[in-house]
Length: 353
Ligand SMILES: NC(=O)c1ccc[n+]([C@@H]2O[C@H](COP(=O)([O-])OP(=O)(O)OC[C@H]3O[C@@H](n4cnc5c(N)ncnc54)[C@H](O)[C@@H]3O)[C@@H](O)[C@H]2O)c1
Image 1 (cartoon, rainbow, N blue to C red):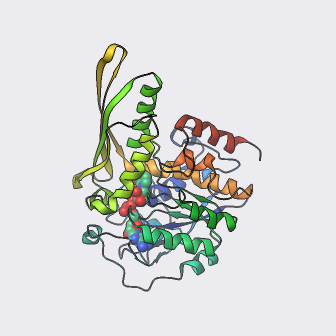
Image 2 (cartoon, helix red, strand yellow):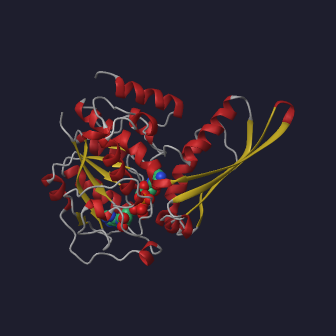
Image 3 (cartoon, rainbow, N blue to C red):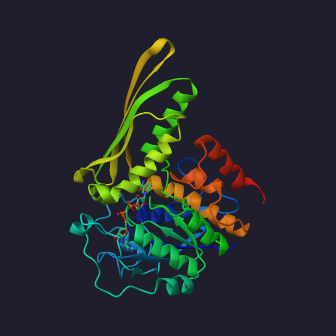
């Protein structure tokens, strides 16, 4: 069975967790059933995934082997796997709007010339390009999506930039008989998935939601960049889209990152608040806190998405199948409730064709 050749755009925290996970779970059968979302997607296991190219702009990462680049500052997600040399050198991509003014305070841009991305993707026979650029890198996301299209690669948009949920981009990928899935990964365990589940459960049981918020603090470079409100507006929008779909009416709802706390590292604390009423106008409030590490939660879902995109490719299903997009992303082209999406994904991944 052929391997799935992957290229990474943005060797940040999520890429670090993903590369570590592919090494860690690719070696052991025992641990697969407990921590991963899905052991096998079609015929594909984690063992079948292979990184063949990586792009970044940070002088700490460009020119290094991927196994070393993933542990360079400002990446701060914990190390859980000793990744051996991969033979993949991180290449310099064009910067465009990849970094905002806050991120530029912490990242030195490599002075080397950007590579020809299309040529690199072709030379390395990349099946799927995974976009893990920072939130707000809208021009850079479109640039890489165009290069992937010309190089005949499928595209996973893990970022909140609007792409897979945009009909124009979907048509371009469909015409090229390629897959385009996104936008903005819904974490394995994260603030959006939990908040959405609680709101939906309450709403289904006849509870009237009066107001709710979800405020996050974290110590990753993403949380730091989120202080730049314009760049962060896309992330906020995708969170609100996912949460708003859980309840069939509008109510005051606030969601998003509210501050950067450097010593938290790659962990994030999400504070949830819900106020509502039920039979006899009886009032309730729910006040809950979640603390988790961000990047592994994204990588876990990506491991399912990568294998599902390859499966769609094998089955000649083009564009952004709802079995993948609605299951794994906050802003999908065809949003459906979480529980239905999980069933669809399972059917897709276990059926024979
Ligand atoms: N749990 C999660 O962490 C999670 C969940 C959902 C979505 N996401 C999304 O995933 C994306 C990546 O998150 P992260 O925490 O890994 O971010 P990060 O900031 O740690 O990594 C981004 C990387 O992109 C690089 N970069 C910037 N401009 C570039 C360019 N033009 N070309 C190539 N590389 C460039 C940066 O140098 C950095 O290494 C974000 O858009 C985030 O919103 C993350």
